[in-house]
Each structure stands twice: as C-alpha cells, then as structure tokens.
Length: 150
Image 1 (tube, one colour):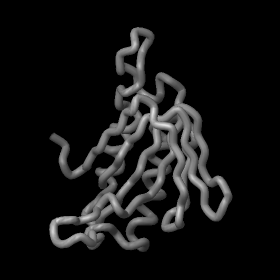
Image 2: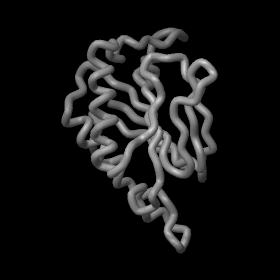
Image 3: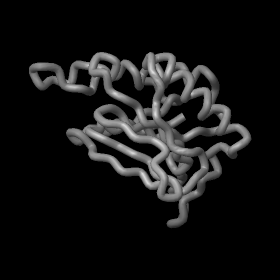
Image 4: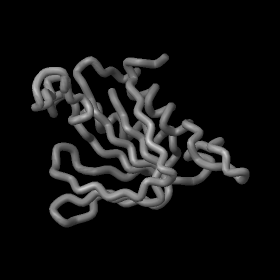
C-alpha cells in the first residue's frame, strides 16, 4: 500500500456535485492498493497514520498526532499512486489492484482507521470520479509505502 498524507486545515470530496466527505483540520489520506497488500499493511499504515506526529504543539514544533489534536481523517482511494512511469510517457497502472481485491481492502482500512482513531472517518467513493479540495496546512505532505518500512 502506498499513501500520501496531507495535513490540512480543511478538505472535501465531491462526487456528481454532492459532497461525500468533509473535514476541518486533520489529515487527507490518499490510498493506493496493490495485490501484494495484506491485512498487516492495513494495521501498520493505520497505526502510522493515527500516531504520526506532524501537528504543531504549543511551541510550534511538529510533536502531536491527530488523536491529540482531535482532528479528522478523510480517506480517498487513488489507484494512480501505483503508476509506473519508467517506459514512455503514458503511465502503467498494472500494479494497482482491481476492484474485486481493492474494495474489501479499502473497506478494511476504513474500519481500522476508525478503530485506531476512535471515531468515524470521512471517505470518498471507491472508483468514482472524485473532485478533491484541500487547504494544505504547512504545507505538510508525507509519502509512505508499506513495502518500505525502513
């Protein structure tokens, strides 16, 4: 699994002109799933997301996690995170999982994030043409690949 985490002041997802997910201060998490992913990747990434200390403390130092700030999470599926751009100019998405595997994994990630965060999270709609709006705070953007845990 690959994720892009963006610390946001606000973020939303719109599908067919209807808002499907909306948060204030918190994290926008873009999630790419591949066939090699397992439940272990979900547990590890969810723990990492909910404990990552990227929010400012009283001294302006990034020292707090989302649970300590009371922030929210907006999770959006994004198969293009697995784009292979080595050959030519048209990316290949062959590593990105097909919906029959990816949807259950996406749903497990939602449940795990809710468990680890201790509250409901907001989401986009898997496979939909989504319009994502965000106000990146910082900016703070972090990329994590569960297959590279160094």
